[in-house]
Length: 390
Ligand SMILES: Cc1ncc(COP(=O)(O)O)c(C=O)c1O
Image (cartoon, rainbow, N blue to C red; front, side, top):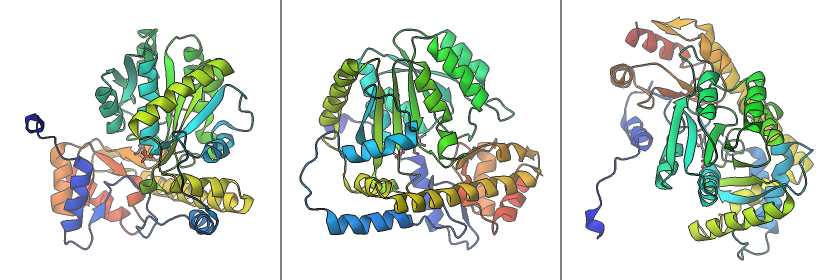
């Protein structure tokens, strides 16, 4: 039986990491991998998380099973950060998931279980979105996320929603769109929320980078507005970026239902799906986040560390935009976009030449991790861009 399986292509980004590591050139630049980097190129553990982990080692009395919902102290401690202080009580609850990926997977599986067959999504998107939709046997209905001049394409979203109906869901990035960096403005979110209020389409919001765009509150603007406008919605959350916990796999799925009775029923289905998929999520990272959020001092430290990350990303974006152009490329839109990622409109040949001739590594799609740029390598990068896109 197993021998019938066809070879699957290797994950392109993981293959890129290997190529980068094997490159002996001292001035090589890695813009491929999607993790935050400091100005020195590292991805350190947050100080607040280190302190919480020490506390955890000291205080954790047992590692007995928790259940498919995971650490509910974590799930609830995160809610004021995600939803603000005025969470509608009795209509929203959540469960811990293995990372944001587990949350997206569970959100879409839950949507499918309730009769959703089609998922509307702006493209390009994080590649795993389409893979999860396909793996669940759902249909992907794609529309353009961004216009060529680097703004969100609201016309395309309006059109997709107008053509959709009962049995459809729309997957929206809450902030820091991956891979384009093109976020909806507050005014656009106002319009999206108004459209969704009139539509039977189920909103599924993927909030994977809260705090890395404009700020913790600002990055939740769209998600909160949509949830306030509709009776039902799903929100997939990742703490892997804004707490720097990537490999510890920390996320949550939040469900908003019409009333508390429906919420209980929907959550019971989410828990059944979690049980059948991974039984229960890994504990360590979520417990560390809970300890941070339960402690005022550690929360302040975490917020400060997150502010520094966001400020650095903003500085790199501003420095890139300040270069104006690189050959035929207009770099100014990158200063108006948010989060770690940006798309460069380069051909396969240009991306290949950047790698071969200039030791600059980026995804084959043209996505770069802005955080891979530093004051030390920015000029080299824009010089190489000008050379290939001249
Ligand atoms: C838009 C988006 N959603 C979800 C995720 C999943 O994140 P996690 O590492 O927490 O699974 C990512 C990670 O790259 C992402 O970019």
